[in-house]
Length: 327
Length: 262
Ligand SMILES: Cc1cc2nc3c(=O)[nH]c(=O)nc-3n(C[C@H](O)[C@H](O)[C@H](O)COP(=O)(O)OP(=O)(O)OC[C@H]3O[C@@H](n4cnc5c(N)ncnc54)[C@H](O)[C@@H]3O)c2cc1C
Ligand SMILES: Nc1ncnc2c1ncn2[C@@H]1O[C@H](COP(=O)(O)O)[C@@H](O)[C@H]1O
Image 1 (cartoon, each protein chain N blue to C red):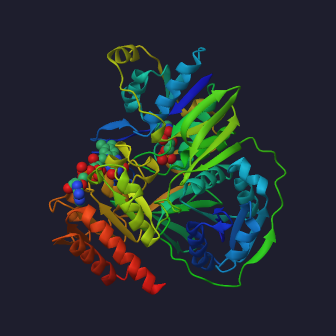
Image 2: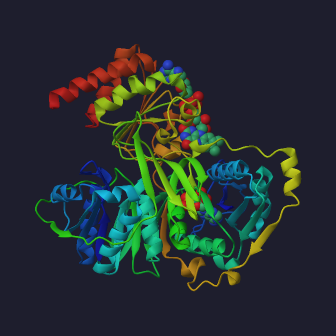
Image 3: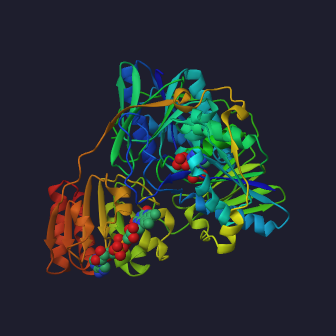
């Protein structure tokens, strides 16, 4: 394992931020191993995505620009990743720990009999060996795992943890040959629902609502507005999801998403252990709750006791003003 | 149609989970073990498909678990599954995601299957990587994160959740699908179901029956735990009582500025 191969997920001609984070995380690892960083971009508008990736620290950007691939699900993406990894030789493969990243990374891992380190928040190289840190058991334990018995290793990186560092002008663009295979999966259509641009896993600011929201309106109204002012996403507790106020994709916690945003604002959420395990690795936690005695007081950096319906709209105004000044 | 549902047994969510510092494995003794809550959606989806087809289709539960998990697997039979297979072998101890996927795939291949359903993640590992690996080793397409499943004319068609909506995706059988929480409301076993499950068959499968060419268990695993650490606990932060909305908003705003978040 000397080279680092990064799978780039993209949409509408732009790489997802979590994939750019993975690309940036690859650089110091490849340098420590004495290898190169390869990025793999396949699908519709891949050429445009690759061009923009030149701003980040890749040595080679392998491109397969083919709009028809989008109709075949992840299988052609796995083939593209496999061809680059096999040509590079024994390699560490990085994907973002997103829905597509997991699908591609896991299928690739089985194809080359590689181990997977999941939900990685740190990578180090010790005596030429790659070791990955991951929070386990709801963040109560941090494991450091190496790969063994394998020429390839796959790590799925938790979004929002690895810093993005610009390093212009390095990546050489290389065309990737199509696999020539025919694919059996068909994506028949795609529907965008009323959902934020970013999922809660990737957003650096998440504004979540709980049972205290009392109904669906705040999730498309005041919470949405506050999240939007930050350029973030709306999350929810299970109580809110079970009540049908917002879809399960937004749920944070043990039976929802585990996230590490820079800022987590919990509105009308008590902070039960099953919620806590999904967000306790956020860099900063702010809670707004009308009750001072809630469990979230024990682990929030700031708890403001008061009525969320009065506070949140005022806060949105302040955030918008501040952002307008800096813009 | 033969439907196989993979089910993991996990420590109860309310149990105090810990990893043994000596073996670096999850402690599974002295805690209540339950069906992975996510897998109940896959079981329910399988039962609904079987009952809608009403053509003699069957649902088989497949779990890689120590023999001690046998009676917990029976809960899935009480929900209505037809039979179960448990892959239990001391040689599997210490398996990582790779070894688990490799062994389960060969265990499933030892029987018949047209459709394999899994949960989307387990509450103890939360990797969500097993479904994709399993499909690859079975040599079948994977349609993941299904919130709706239909089978017609030899094709599986699902609504696949995405971060911002959903896709309609289809593939020919045999295929694998992972089932999300929004797919259904898992049923509780009825008294009749519980009684009936006592007579249902739970077959044990041993490693030797799989003809594996690669080592599994701790020796064959592709990953190895080097170290365990406990992260520093989060501190009890500041509590501010807001006189009104504007004061509460100002308290949050000032705090965010002090942290350079604005
Ligand atoms: C197996 C299992 C898995 C689970 N998984 C999850 C999970 O993934 N995610 C999850 O979140 N939960 C999960 N739970 C549920 C969890 O135990 C809690 O029940 C849930 O998190 C509570 O949600 P809540 O904080 O929104 O509701 P509550 O605990 O009811 O809290 C609502 C809060 O709103 C406050 N409030 C009310 N009105 C206002 C107002 N006007 N202004 C300000 N504050 C107000 C109240 O003071 C209260 O603190 C799980 C439970 C189990 C058993
Ligand atoms: N030991 C196991 N036996 C059977 N199925 C499993 C096992 N481990 C994981 N699975 C299946 O794989 C899914 C994803 O689990 P994981 O990848 O561990 O998060 C689960 O929902 C189960 O359906």
